[in-house]
Length: 77
Image (cartoon, rainbow, N blue to C red; front, side, top):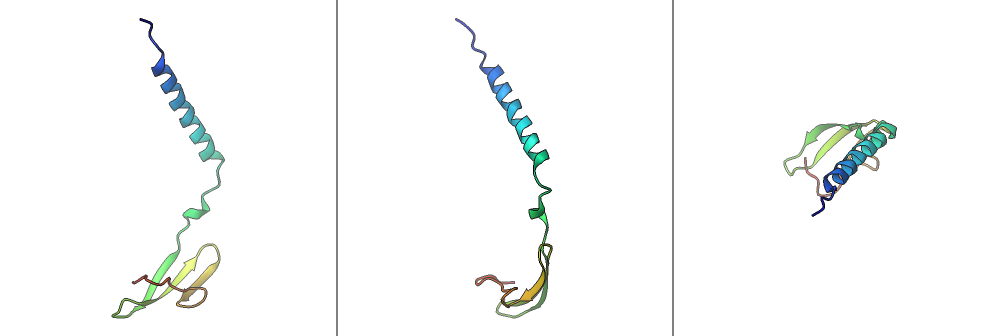
């Protein structure tokens, strides 16, 4: 019975995936999507609605509710 080198192929494929992942990670952007929006609750009502202020790292800031700072419906503080 002849031995098949399956382990070598699995190891080679795994190493290739690790190297390709590292190359993609190094050549990718600095992950600007990981910037956080700072959110401050200004006041909260007994029914769960609230007024908030935030600082957006991509485009200034805003306060809600309003056209630029509206809290989506169904969201409670």
